[in-house]
Length: 117
Image 1: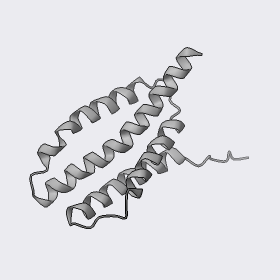
Image 2: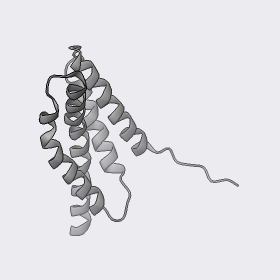
Image 3: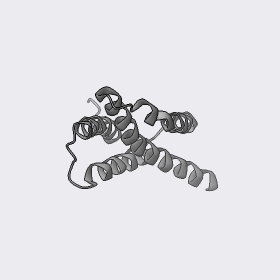
């Protein structure tokens, strides 16, 4: 009998988060603001979901990659020089940093919790 595959919520949340970040950055570049802070809240929820469902034994590569990505994204405002492509890329990086920072924080807390037990 074939094994039933589990639904990969973490992969879907990751994919939806970068698609949402791209969509929001394109909309913000052309002056269309989404309703309130709901899309950014969705990025935080997706980050919590990905961080909570991260199952790798060794989490240090994920944490180092997250840290490096966030540190490099501090230079994202340099990309935003007024042109449409620069504004889209800069806004995308800022929004993706919200998602990735939340996921990294949850993974780090899970690692600390397992080390203390």
